[in-house]
Length: 277
Image (cartoon, rainbow, N blue to C red; front, side, top):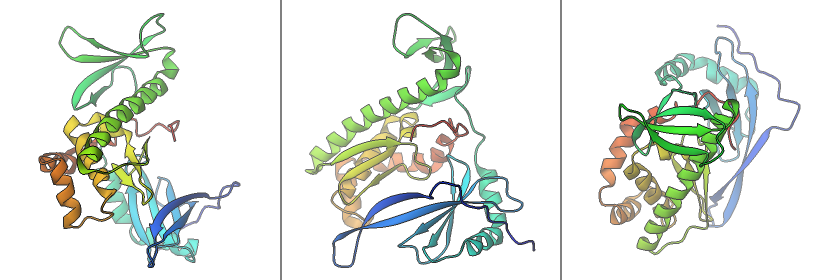
């Protein structure tokens, strides 16, 4: 079996991210992760090695948005060991990558959902009046998202608009569920998350995937309720699920929709590298 090649780290420092976590004494600590690029013989996709302080073993997952491989390893793990670990699981990686639906970039004429309903994208060029993105309709009845401006800037303009729409809807639903449960979120952010629909930190900060705006409103509502419940219960135990069901009795409908259709949402704008952080 050929030995995997490890790519040298980039000239800049490896990326670091801090994730709040609780130590045994209940105090908040910060777990630091470092990312290093890796090249694996026979694998034509990016591979990212993340060193994480709390990792006790090597784990492997697929970033659906970036269509890349992520290996999480303990801090003292050698890069060669991470490469061998990926190489041993090449069949698993290839199977998961092959299962990803084909990407749909933001291009003129593409069909994409918005709040659960399909729309046609139309890049209409510069216009003197009107919003950056407007709703129009074809004779066939198919709704249109008309994006104005220079064509090469249209994908970025549409993406920015999508972030704004997602934030608006999420802020409203987070406020609703927080009031109903007597909780309070510290801050809300919308990102291009590759594997999670939402997250909640121990300090009360909520983060969501912008792609929730593509799903039916009940799905966005469920994810908002889910993360608000984490403000009280940082786990998935019975008390947590009781809170989610208390504020959203029909949560099961949204859960099933995500299980069946969630992967499909990651293909929209998935292959564009000029994304908002």
